Image (cartoon, rainbow, N blue to C red; front, side, top):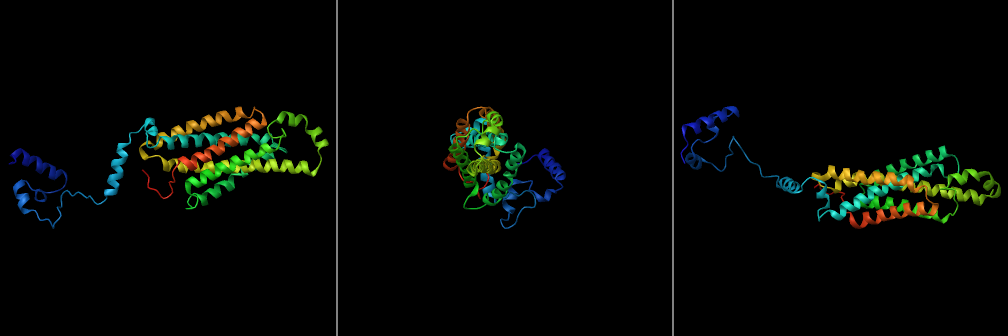
Length: 280
């Protein structure tokens, strides 16, 4: 098809806008087909198809529609629910153990400081295990939840109300100490405090891992939405934690321990390992 004079003028104006010349492009389709040299690259427009992997990832990301409904697509429904439950569990157990500072034996200020210090080695340990091929993201999170859950369940072996009944503890402190002034009683109190600190250590480690794990688990198109839903689930855990502390000792500890162990099982069974994997 022959080009008209208007077409020639439009092409020239386009060339001037792009700081090019009409010599860089053919104004005649027939001459372009005859004078084209396959060994020479055009100085005008050039298409590079070298990074086909990036183009494939871009095409795949466009197929995922942003929105909360995409989190429950068949290919990621189980993973999303498992991660949401992990966020609920870590916040529920974290604040539940934090509220035990005033219910442990000894000074509330000392207990609060000890529970806060227990978080520091947990964060340092996660820095080593997250990138270790033996643990990775999944092993670190499952191990942290499992360790915390076992520690809280072991507290059920001590029937004393000293941990989760601060009113009776304060009222009967003098009488109880006068009746049980022995090394065995002190050892029991030390075991309770150690298990509470161990539980806080494990939950703090899980809290550090879930942020990294969730950012790598969800595709880019829905990552922001996924973090929003994860935080909603976490807030529910923070709301229920202080309400649970009003229950009896075996109910509160048993519930937190069961939730933590369940989160460990969900992590290990339903969530894939994301260490070394390309982001979707």
